[in-house]
Length: 316
Image 1 (spheres, rainbow, N blue to C red):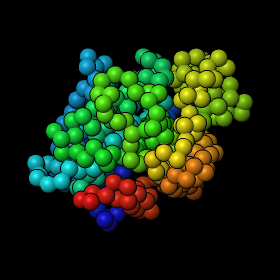
Image 2: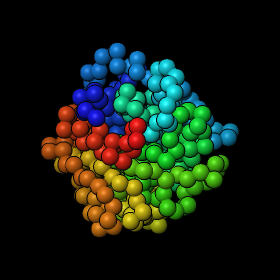
Image 3: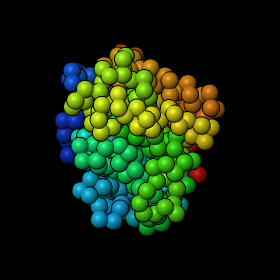
Image 4: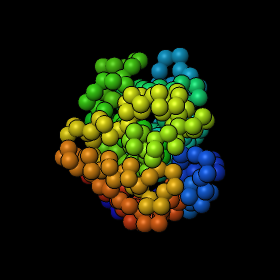
């Protein structure tokens, strides 16, 4: 599978919006050059490869943000079910949109894609966000035959806050801590994870930890209160503490000059995965910030395409 076939960009699809790198984590003091996404260089013809099924609710009586979009080939095609790549946007768990889905560009390579939204932290604190992500994965499995999806081959991909959520999905497939709601007969486990600079350990995020828990801070809002009184929840929200040999394979990308998510967060998660015997790759973007053009180079495109082919195997 050639990486040239995947004209990748973490910019918007048809509705170009000035988001961060696919909705990256926004915190006070963030610099525009560190969080701005590269403009798309994909021609309009590339969009003819897929069709969109929009705003599908994945729970009964869905809140406005408990919906997802599915991307399939432009014309119905007979054949084997397609592996699915699920995009989870970032935005500090309190902004962002499913409308911009880089995974949709992989439909032409034999995948189906989905993009999900989840309740924001100002509306519902953690664990609402991961509960919604797991509910969406279960819904997609329950409706896999309807959409020509292979329920045994689901990968997830996210950036920043979305990277945190996909990482948590990847390490909790063997536990039921966050599985609530409908379709509990379906698994919320995923087969692989692409994590772009997601926070992984809130107990060791700052030095001291309270440097990131002031009123109005994104992490404090996610937890529903100051870190000092929510340490147990902070641990529960941290993917690194769920790592076992049952975790999904990971591809982690992290900038070494990220001003928002310390590089040590990704390094520590990768070390925990390696210690547990979980296949994984950590790619450090030299000079990379919290997103930016270093995350859409030919080298990165090839890493993504090869990783997905290895663990999801379209046509296999």
